[in-house]
Amino acid sequence: MVQSSESPKAFRLWPFVFIAAVVGIAAIGFAYTAGWLSPHRLTPEKLVAGLAPPGGPALGHRRNHAKGICFTGTFEANGEGSALSKAPVFVRGQYPVVGRFNLGTPHPDAADAMVRVRGLGILITTPDGQQWRSAMINAPIFPVSTPQAFYDLLTASGSKDPDAMKNFIGANPEFTTFLPWAKSDQWTESYAEERYNSLNSFLFVDGSGAKHPIRWSLIPAAQPVSITPEELAKRGLDFLEQEITQRVAAGAQHWNLIVTVASPGDPTADPNNAWPADRRTVNVGTMTVQQIEPEPDGPCRDINYDPTVLPDGITTSDDPFPAARSAAYSRSYNSRTAEASDYPRNATGARQ
Image (cartoon, rainbow, N blue to C red; front, side, top):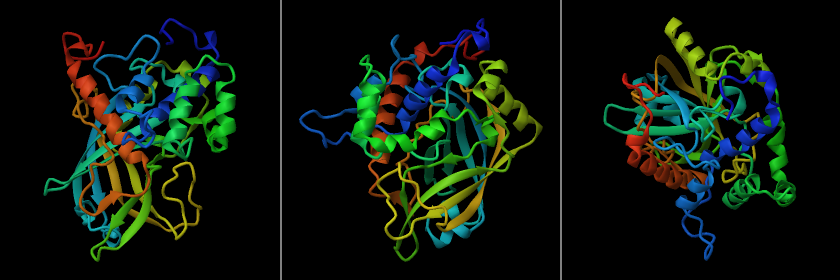
């Protein structure tokens, strides 16, 4: 891990950034754990343990996306979503949101410039107590098509065999469609400038019971400003948290929640396969971030952003990854809450 005493020029960013991009995706796609691969059954325990860095996990922290900061705000539904889903969250009105900006890394003290994947978790609650939880990332597609391929990727990325990744790509050529984004040196300079994507497919169920396969994205109102990882490194290890805190203090930040509706024949079980750009989209409302709070004592600290916690009117599709994520998130949550006494705090309650 890069220490604060190191100059940004004292290391080459890209080997670390690429590894972070691969490993950071891990929390988004654990292989399904219901016995598909018996007798060599994959389990949440094995997969979560596989995310740990050589020195072991950061106790008390999420096993991935460990670096993050909390926010509170609102989701204002415009009523347009009600034609697709009977979920109360789409009825015109304003609903509270508890969220978390984060980086896809198992290191809570990682330098911002070392992590390609940025994430956003949200929990929206309606007056009747129903919840919609979602964990999104800024990647446009998932690196692989199947849970087994993901597990093979995780294994290959941690292997000492110099041919491991080469062999993996040979067996999973779809991974090459992810590489241009992972290797891109044009990043944004703020959490507020990122587009966050669900990647996984879900089903919206309308009032008549009809099911609509969908994906969703949060599109920022802020104009993205490109920055290279080298330039980001010069701004400090924790620039993203500092910047979003200052930005929101100066004014609330907004994202439009855009739902994309699949056409017949569009793949719903393969998050590596993007739907064509001409698919129908519906702006169903606006998320507003009103306040940023440090995570140690913040409202997002103990929330598990399980993507299968859905309100009536939204359900999972044939995409296997939400169930996989749910199982692994549960394992991570149980581990870190059991380690609460190990979570580093100083006398004022802030993380050291």
